[in-house]
Image (cartoon, rainbow, N blue to C red; front, side, top):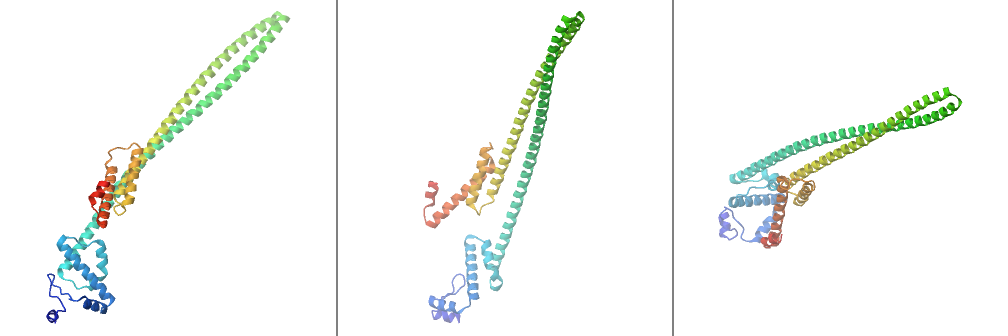
Length: 318
């Protein structure tokens, strides 16, 4: 019957792929109208698979993940030859291998990131604990200095009171001397006592001044300790930001399907690294920037291909 249709010029003779085609598109259209929707879908899927196999023979391109998902519902309803069945099976194996490789890479990257974050977190917590301890010591020293200053003020007041008492006793001694010799002797004795008290008051005043100087030194030491604590906290903050820059750079390397977001993340990682005195030749940062640049170039080439423009012109403009 097929040969008869060929002789009647209804069918074309067998081509290099062993297929017969209708000579008139109007006949193909009428036949296509008669088949069911499921048959049409099966025909489209079968045609797609055969075209993909032809492309595989010419260019060695296997089916992609989207292609396998597309033919999966119809695969058991199609009658395919052994070569195409092997072609589909090979595509599935390669897809599963690629997915396992991606999973292994993601697991490795995640493990490295977790280890790095844990290390920097522990280091930052340790530095912060040391800074807090230094601040506490500084506060204790400051309180001790303030207490010493208060005691010095009290000693000074006591010395002043003693001096007033001594002056009062001296006046009483002069008055007693006019009354009697005995009173004079008692006045002299009182005066000597007053002089001793005055000397003691001066000693206490000197001691108070010395304590005040010590308190000032303690306050200066406390200020220096606080500055050291602040510097340690700033250094811990800078290291946290450098760690964040590394994490962002690593994150951008896994964002191939979101090139624009990948570029923003890579740029932010570079800014964090630059603003916090990071290494100018950090390999992770520059790998992220280079990968983002490659993605931009690929998008330019794709736009040039769609608009049928010379891609080298776009690359020169960039």
